[in-house]
Length: 329
Image (cartoon, rainbow, N blue to C red; front, side):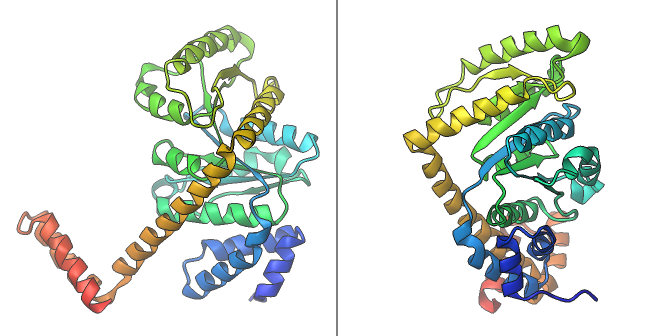
């Protein structure tokens, strides 16, 4: 059995940039064991003063857009500037399918060998809220470990975009030319969240179509209301395969950070995110305590059957369970 590190060993190792200690600390963060949760809270408290200095960038995109290839190309761009980068993934689909994030790590083979890069897949089997919490806390550990840039990738499509938007400073949406009308339903909501839209695979025979898509998305962006950040979103072409347009995307991000730091949005956004994280944690912790309560467990199955068979109104069943929990909690 591997020797368990002390709080001091975890803290000093993380702050010294020890990747092995960082990885072990992230495992503690992801653990559901009570003892590990207590240790994780202590580690976070110790390293908190050294967090907050990284640029937090969220990256999402439709299936098949080439996120892994893009992130590898973008990560290499960042490290070529002498900056260190940590890549984290948030995967709400992993509970059902096992996800693809481990595959993502192998597809980023060059980046994973880069001494300035660190790639950490999300844990499988966690609820969406659990993965989100784990990713937030992992991000703080990476910041304390001295990484200049944190990239948070969404693997699924849906609620995960909102979660990643809520924990990053800049949100990049990757799209394809001619992706199909079936995506129209998800496009608008995600587009409104995006600080920049990049049309990937603008290469070869697809280049002309990609440039037309850039013009179309640019036109669509003009219809959206002005953002609170003061940054005017735009659409740009890129090819992760040919490594074109990647540097321009980094330049746009730098322009965003310059604008938002000057107008105060950057700091305000982070303050609001911290408050949201606190309330999310309260909700998740209370939910865990509720469903782990022995008295709730004893009553839950029979009430679920009653509700399922239309013998008990859902609201009434919920109230009964909450009352039991409150009286015995």
